[in-house]
Structure formats: structure tokens, C-alpha cells
Length: 118
Image (cartoon, rainbow, N blue to C red; front, side, top):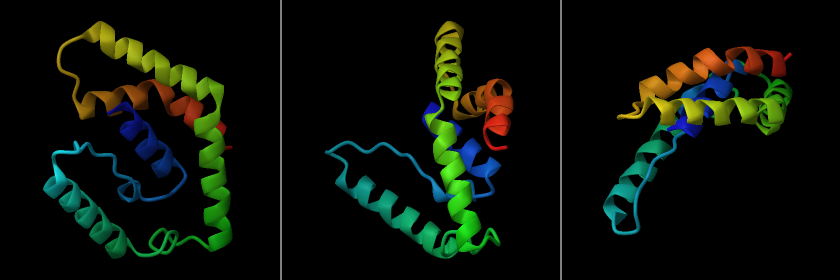
């Protein structure tokens, strides 16, 4: 859940549609579910079109933005902040929802993400 929220936040911040990322779980015993997940995601990507096109970005600008995103998610400051979110979730206990994780990523990592993309 946490990685999903973080990646979508970073993609959004660099101007790439977050719908281009999907992280789902399917066990080895769930072949039909796996096929459906892949088929649905492939359809979603086809509908969006080539990377950069629906975002209105040139190939060069898309490369620049994806390089910034890669550098950002590799940054130790962001990784430590993400680890702190994990600690917060453990302290809160109970059922953690995707919405709560996204909220924590927003609250605790927005400044770090913005600073890393300058």
C-alpha cells in the first residue's frame, strides 16, 4: 500500500498520469485473477496512449521528468521519510486503508518530494 501511494504521488508531481502505475497482489493459485489484472492494466495503458502524449509532453521533457523521479525515489531523505510513515502506521495499529496511507504520504513527504524535483 505504501509503495503504491508513494509512486503515484511522485508520478503526479512530475506530471505523469498516476494511472500508468498499478501494484496488485495475485498469488500463484490465482491465475484467472492475474490474467484479469494484466488484461485490465494493458487496456488502461492502451487507452492512455504513449507515455507523454496524453500529458502533452515531448519525449525529451518526459525523459527529464522520469530521470528526476528516479533520482527522487532513490534519495535517502525520501526513503527515511517513507520509513517513518511505516512506523506511524504500526503505531496507529488497526486496519490501514489505502486512503490513510495516501494521506500520510501527502502530509509527511510532500515537501521532500517538491524539493527533490526542483
